Amino acid sequence: MQSFENSNGKSIVEAMITVIQENKTYLAEVDGLIGDGDHGMNMNKGFTICESRMQGRDISFDEALDELGTILFSEIGGSMGPIYGTIFMEMAESIKGKSQIDAPAFLAMLEAAITGLETIIEAKVGDKTLMDTLIPACDSFKAALDAGDDFSTALTKMEKAAEAGKDSTVDLVAKFGRSSRLGERSRGVLDAGATSCFIILKAMAGAIHQLIS
Image (cartoon, rainbow, N blue to C red; front, side):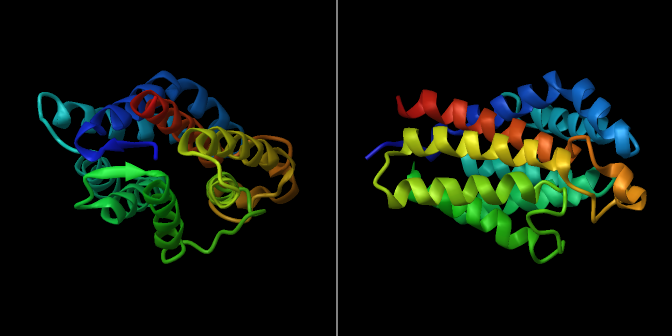
């Protein structure tokens, strides 16, 4: 069965940090179309703080995720700090103490993130939020495992579902956040949270592919 060592998973979080840094301007542009334009800046700030604090430390995947989540939750403003903070802290908790991270463990991470979010936000699929990316990604990954696919194949299908979920937000009307005030005028552009969620999941998948190949 494909898996990687928890102790080697710091590289996954490093890949997530890099991709947010590389896309900070793009995320700001997407957010600026119907939001206040600070999504890229806030995400980059939190992820870069994490990069600095992890530097030179030999920490595991769950420890790195928890570090990132704690920083986002407690030190970054806006709505996305607590939201992404919850995602990563719940992911970390779901694999705490595991020596090997296999496909079922990764599914547990995705499910824990969704369950955690459901305690702090009411958004569902169709509301033009990151849930439009995260929930289809989780559903696709689970369906792939149920069909007998290996970890790598399930990750590839998850990426495609996440991208489709992200793209679906173009045709949706925002139900939450600042953009919800625009009503029908929020239709026609991507949701920034859904976009960053796809970018992060793709980076996670790519880094995991390297560890299990």
